[in-house]
Image 1 (cartoon, rainbow, N blue to C red):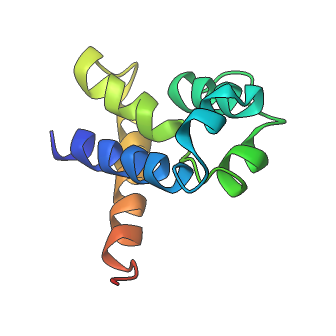
Image 2: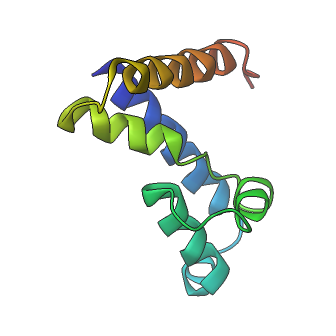
Length: 100
């Protein structure tokens, strides 16, 4: 449950950063729309990854895929371990993050 909360916080923080430009403008941007789809489903993002992460500050789809797998189940022990590592790495970033 805590891992889902971490993923949601990271996703929300990306959306808050995106509000620097008007929200309406962002959601009318076709590249931003493709980035949101990529972030949520993780498919067809090879060419988008850098744009989505650098320009829009969106997290990698693995956070959302792993959060989904917590609810639906993992394909294998290795799959579960990969997700545990992903969340542990993100938790380190959170603990080392800048406090205003």
